[in-house]
Image (cartoon, rainbow, N blue to C red; front, side, top):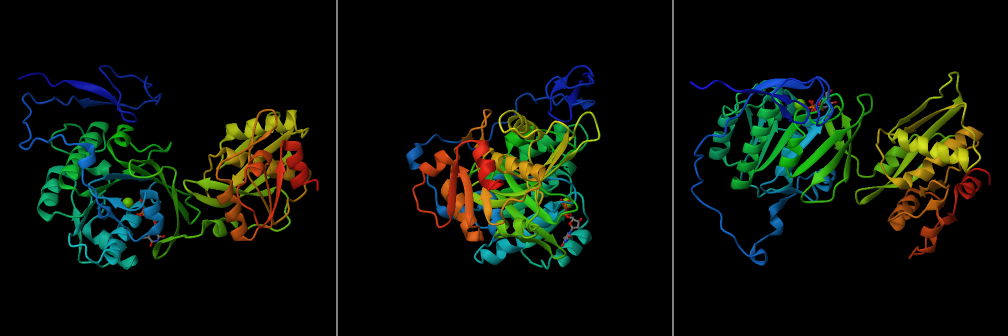
Length: 457
Ligand code: TYD
Ligand code: MG
């Protein structure tokens, strides 16, 4: 008998090494190596019976019905318009954020919306018993006979069930609990997760079944185990949000069938997740009136403008190293803008702590947010409120110039719709506007002009 060969594999990125190492040379994770049996590629792998044929691109048939509406608009949006038959979709997120809840609600609304959908759907849980799933379904008022539930962790058994039941949609909750007999290591290890995902991908493509994989997220936010999973699947959705906050944001980070960075906004209630059709109103609903240190920015998430409130608190620091803390925006970006304010704007924040928070648990990564950050910080520093009916957007350059941004029209229209009366935007964007706005628009060229217009009026 040949000796069993083992290798050490990084549980965070899948890098393998013949020896144990403390720090992964590939992804930099510490103490992430675990000894696993090497997967031997079987000699003489059997050739599939039907070989695929090449065909001209122009003759491949497509029909619109290949996309199935989930009946949940916010979910359709992140998926790029609905579920594509035969696609493999990964939903990641912290434990308890609502992954199992949303997929169960999706299955129910799938049958409500597509009344002619004949095939059943299959919910496979490796974490919960059938009773537990039933209790959750009862709480969500889900009682469809079309939804079949299976409590199973062995991939071979699941595959058999899928082949005989021919479901339209399959949920695997979660991919980390599944194991295949072909891989020797424990469930949850990189090898297992990757092997299972690969097998499910082949199954999805060959049977045109849509498969949703639910993936756990590690403490630092990556989908546990393999980054490689992200390459295998067609679509990656992340569920974001704070535990203490009922709002949940579903974000597409990869989508072969739609635009990325599209978001869907939900609220977790005691009857499950409820979609928020107009997030702007929600994120502004608790805005303090006449307070200094808050600014509203019209920001673009995917294809949709959202009005977001940003709060800043600038106060005297008691430490030699003033603190700069930002929640929802990148701290590096904030440090850069503080340096610009200091050097060009004449706002001296040297001995000051600066705290920033994007209201509603949203994470914004857009240059057009810069002007909002500057406005909120200066407003708090000078203790002068920004007018309640004013919103801003614009990128700030290193020499203090305000740079133009895209999609100005939809940003301005969103603000107008919510009831804002005034906007401060980059001058170059104002010059290029192709429509006549209904509100007062001030174009600014640099941060002095912006501060003047927003605060020192
Ligand atoms: P769950 O979907 O089980 O999270 P995940 O699968 O991502 O781990 O969601 C569990 C949380 O949601 C739990 O803290 C309870 C809460 N919840 C509600 O507030 N309302 C509901 O109707 C349901 C089903 C769950
Ligand atoms: Mg769950």
